Length: 179
Image (cartoon, rainbow, N blue to C red):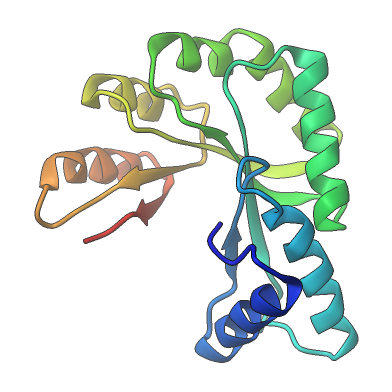
């Protein structure tokens, strides 16, 4: 998201990641040229036989308001930019309102996620949220998602119980914007 000024910058970040033991890359179509730069940089590193042990784990996102045709096209474009055939993780980017959760559980998003998994374009489905605690809890308890990305802060611990609920439900939890 922040290493988008050039391919050289992205390569530098990815090399540092490999040598630091980091293998998870999280991106989104909304992050400027990040997906394209990641795809090109991963290809360059692969040619140089530089990769994390076990390979990269790649997460991208989809916005929770797209119509089905538009959402499918967005996912296919993400895969093309990243130069891969399958994402490890696809997150619904910002379940912040009840209609966003409804989109993912019952609307076009539900159809997209089903289609993407059936066609093996994605392995896991998750979500991120800046929404109210009750909405995040509803998403966690829906059993639709395999992971969530939550803003978890030791100085603002209100979402930590939600992370614990997610973990008890067998979900992966990624702490984003930790402080």
